[in-house]
Length: 200
Picture (spheres, rainbow, N blue to C red):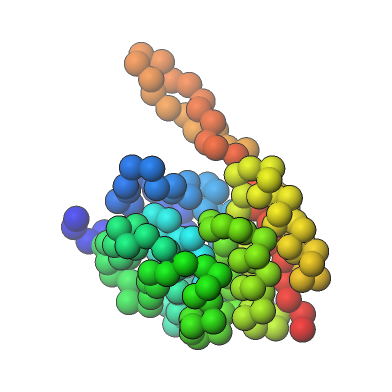
């Protein structure tokens, strides 16, 4: 796939710019914007993205934090290759892809993160609690859930680790699409986005 140029300082790369694999979730552009807003990245941020899937968050974060380091954790080698291809087409050199399973691999990751994004994995509650142990003081954690079960598990985990400034939002997004001879508004799958800060 030819290299792509995203010449803007704002995030929001169109979904069609990313290579995909059947059955592998992609964080849609509008939801991605909400996740990135809650991460509050800085130019030198260190982000661990756990359950990176297609790699849309690592790509956007890598562009937003050019002096930073992004560590994308994905347990499936084929999916990890997809993330690498998506990073390569944007010319990113600051994204490291770790093929391993969380939470077992977290102790071996470096450098220490000041941001953690939890997009998948099981059990999510335990992964969040263990990732929290490595999160630098003053850091932020953002997690996504597409089910009530995961929403509950993540909410419980944020309470357990005593996260501060907890926020929970649900994306409700509709896109104009052409189907046959008609234009309709089609819903993008709603996602819960949870975030919190670590003060000690």
